[in-house]
Length: 175
Image 1: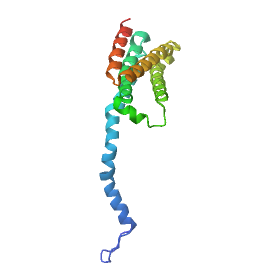
Image 2: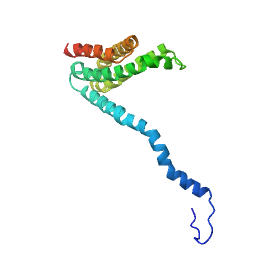
Image 3: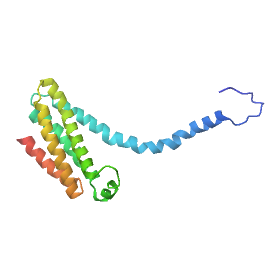
Image 4: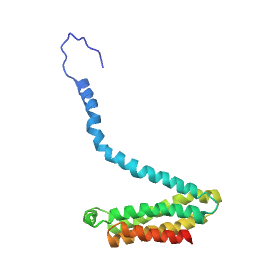
C-alpha cells in the first residue's frame, strides 16, 4: 500500500476494502469456528491422548491382560457414545434422508471400530514381532463394535450399550 499525501483528497479504493475486510474477519469468522475448535479441544485431543496411552500400555510384557483391556476400555466409551448419537430416536428420521442407507452406515461404524482396535494393537504387534495382539484386537474390536451398534439400534440410546460393554469389559479384564 502506498503512502499518500495527507493534503490530497482520498478516494476509497480496493486497498480500503481489503483493510476493512481484514479488520472484520476475526469478528465474523471466529464465532463460526469456535464450536469446531471447542469440540476438538474437549473430545478429539483427549481421545487421541488416551489412545496413545493405551497403545503405549500395550508395549508391556502381557498384552492380553494390560494393553488389550486398556484399548478395549477406551473403545467401549467411544463406541457407545457414537452409537448412541447416530442411533438416537430423534435423529433416525434425519439420517433416513441421507444418501447412505442405515445398514451401510452401521457397517462403516463397525469397520471404523475395528480399525481403531487394530491401530491400538499395532505397536504391540510390531514390538513383539507377532500377530497375536492383532488377532486379539480383531476379535475384541469386532465384538465391541457389533455389540455397541446393535444395542444402540435396539434401544436408541448410548446407556444400554455402555452398561453391557462395561460389564463385558470387566469379565474380559478379570479372566
